Length: 268
Image (cartoon, rainbow, N blue to C red):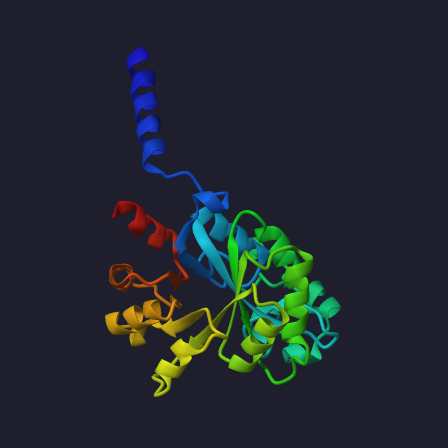
């Protein structure tokens, strides 16, 4: 009996030693790891559950998408339509915050997330505060009249301007953010080759570029560094590509599987 208990104790100790503790503070997180829409392979995208899972996975950042509702509330949503994640067949700009809060934002993913709701940016910032930074993508759907202004106001009100990076495909939105509060880090999202990349890198509006991983080369990373720009790459789910991006020295890797990327970094 004594030998059996000793063996069980040794096995349990070995197991606990092999499992790294979950990161719960910014100091314990990995700045090179950005959880795409939160840890979206493990929890429903753009929900508080996904942000909490990103924290548990050790991510340095959670990337989230924000849009305005019909009544001007900045809430988390990737698609123009809210149908895929809520079951409501309306575009984001025609649904109210109250309607969204009545719908499940997690049942589509798994029944255990049925209680999840579409969170506001304010709720996301409060959940992240002191535990993970946010990469807030402004989605320009053509109807968000005050998206940049409201986002900046919320970040200022929550004392979160230094804990969040604001990104967008739309440089005009980023220029508006920078004008409203120069302290906020901004990043231009790039999904295809651009002939004006030199001008992008020289543009003081942008502190970073967030670029599709298929477009990333060492020359680009080096040029970005010369201009003082950070480089984020998306969306990387293949471990071999993760390794390549780490070797190139990019600032952060956006992935649906942050737990895999954390393991790779810890093993280096």
